[in-house]
Image (cartoon, rainbow, N blue to C red; front, top):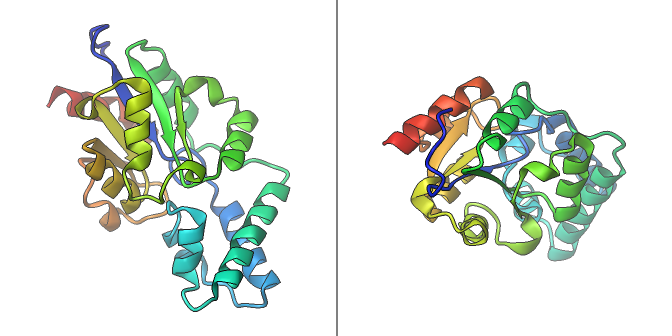
Length: 223
């Protein structure tokens, strides 16, 4: 990717689950464990993955709208307990690390995360893959309303000092695209995640491989 002027800071904000890491097996297993412990039938796999991107309480409420507040809290707590007890971290998608390293090589390009994960869950993942040093801003569900509310992105812009028109949101769900638009960011939808291509129709650019990310960013920043 062509370097930009040193006074022209850019920001690339990444979703995590379904964008950087392939966490579907852990998500499904933890969802099933939570529902099973509550004695309720778990939704099917496609339905569970359809709410990835929302913060956990909102995701559980969408999956089980009939439960009481206490049962919803139990579902959330049991999901988190199951997730934390997992011994291995979800694997990075092919090309993710190379793409992050390529962007990190440019002093003018800053990287951030905006995720529905808790801070504890994100830190576990970043530590497992030694990713923490690559990101200058980490926005998590603990501190913000659920996507697609733009709070996470507004905080990332404030922390980095980058203007919205110089920032891009990269994600795999329609919630990421809606959040990006709400905050005034350009959006790149990745098609290897948990929402089908048709749900990403609101993205400015769609890519099918991490190798295409650099060119996609160039196209957006030249526009």
